[in-house]
Length: 116
Image (cartoon, rainbow, N blue to C red; front, side, top):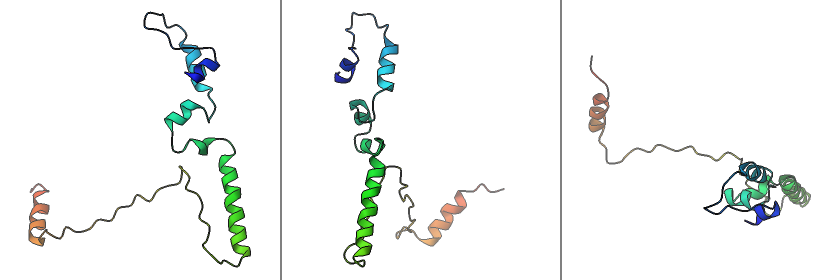
């Protein structure tokens, strides 16, 4: 509601005619990256998409790494912050079922294929 009031808009009542959708769409599309609608859609990572934030974090990380190197690598090595666009390791390991016998597995495997 506060974002709409900045544009002089308001939600219509149930008995009112809605003919101002163009104004509503333009208000939503031109909302800044740190606006309330953007924050509501992406509550955990919205700040990463504010222009300049990623660059600022990168400068802080590089400074921390340079200071760590100047100290001779003593102490814990600085870790970079996780970005929302970094790929997550989604590989899964397939582990054998300890309760399955080999003969039971072979019977199940043969049953999966149609015999000609």
